[in-house]
Image 1 (cartoon, helix red, strand yellow):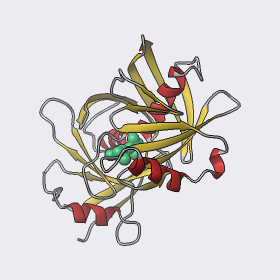
Image 2: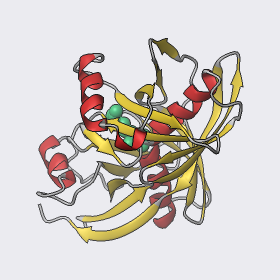
Image 3: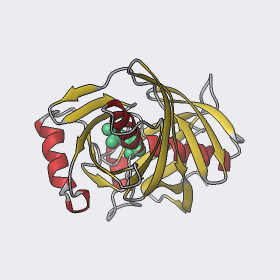
Length: 258
Ligand SMILES: N[C@H](CCC[C@H](N)C(=O)O)C(=O)O
């Protein structure tokens, strides 16, 4: 069945997942990808991900944002594709795969995927905000009253106003009583708030450590769609062995009839 697709979600960040090891998916068709991701005219998803063959690793992840354009790294999508590769018997519990930002190690135990993220060597401090690249660009801003904050409006303003056409993902963060953090993210390419953003959660954990808002190197981050954990090593402001951990689940299977 060559048009089979699967749907996965990782803490509420949802993806159409396609096994493209035969190379038949027309990935240059931006309109088609956008249509598949559209929540009224298509399947509905924050992004579409292809699992492809790779010469040097177990597989290659090719990620498209909901607007149909190839995106930068997607942390939740990375966790979901590990679950998909395990489901397809491409991998067992451990893997190394290739993505747009380079190699990623990962492990899967049950529904929980732990994904190694890109090292981060530079965190820019801006007035009232931080900026870093965790595979995707992320602006981070502390706010009060996160629950009622207008993420879509403020996110869009910052994404276009400060970062222009190329843009950035924009994260708003608040400290919880237990010492962890809550996050809401405006995603570039989706151009709206999503329920979770893995590279954003990673950026928030590193950012909060960087400015001394936590002393822990294992940080709990609550997104609207679920909880994630980020662990890392730090040496003179350089971050390595960064792992993003949380659930990734297959939710349904269908046939595309384009
Ligand atoms: N949802 C993704 C981020 C996608 C990045 C994308 N919005 C871009 O800037 O190209 C994540 O879990 O990390």
